[in-house]
Amino acid sequence: MSTSPGVQLRTARTADLPPAELTGLRALLDAAFAGRFGDDDWSHALGGVHVLATVGADLVGHASVVVRRLTSGGRPLRTGYVEAVAVAAARRRQGIGSAVMAEVERLVTGGFELGALSASRQALGLYTARGWLRWTGEVAAHTPDGVVDCPGEAVFVLPTPATPAPLDTAVRLVCDWRRGDLW
Image (cartoon, rainbow, N blue to C red; front, side, top):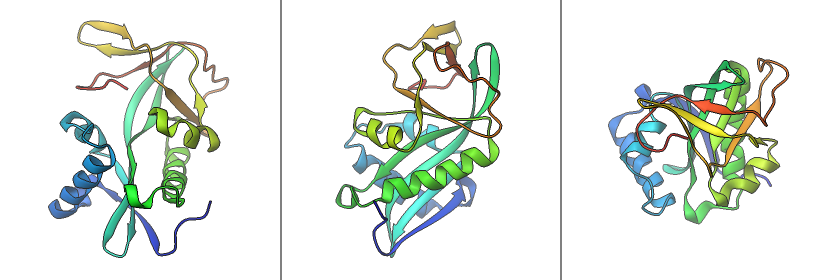
């Protein structure tokens, strides 16, 4: 599917986005997630690189890539973790999400050992179609109380040229600690 005419993509670090643009971004995410995007989710999307899709002056799509440390088979992996993937409701099914993800994938494969994300049910098809691999092993998280299992998470990974071989998606994958949703 091709991207809608007039859609422009750009990348920017969180620190380079002015307050008004951050406010507009939060509004897009709040609307796109229909009230299920909280302050912890917002915090998770900050501190990395944002991929922003605009039509004219309107922000219509977004994803961010933040640095996380995941551990697979006892090996820590410097991971480009994808957060806050969203497209404005009126602009869905026009290729904007795919265009945003193509830029995300360029960023991840160019600078990390692994790409990873936790997918909603609605987005499973997008990530699968783009070649992301479903993690079939257990997933867990380091917490202040030790490592805890996180059953039910739909975790996907994207191997990069720097991914140590072999990557076994059937072993346990452990993420670093953060407030809110661990994945």
